[in-house]
Amino acid sequence: MYISEKEIEIRYAETDQMGVVYHANYLVWMEIGRTKLIEDLGFTYAGLEAEGYLSPVTDLSIQYKAAMKYGQQVIIRTWVELHGRLRTTYGYEILHADGTLAATATSEHVVVKKENFRPVSLRKIAPDWDAKYVEIRRVAD
Image (cartoon, rainbow, N blue to C red; front, side, top):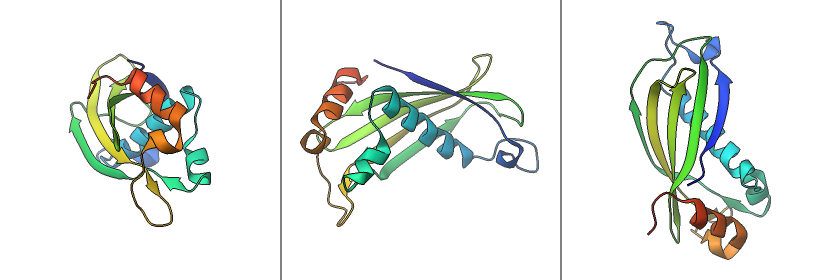
């Protein structure tokens, strides 16, 4: 299993009135993590879009474990949890710089044609990308 890591610093704008990171920012961090993973593997989401495809989120789950605050460093760990014919599930760990777990999450995605939102197999449109996901996924079908 391949795990991508991305480190970012929490910005003031990402916090709420209590000085704690607002929960919706974890979704943005997950997107940053997915983008980094895809780029680490030699592909780009922008390239997929340029070919006329999108990869919308179909399911999302986050478990918050420990608060994060302004100025702290965040480590986003991302991997391919499951990858099948039509669906890919990414796994995430959001960590404090000292390794303390702040959140765990998964997001499920499908690839669709931009013009009509019909699902399409990644294997059909990007066989190299599909093969890489099969190779690195954590859980086999």
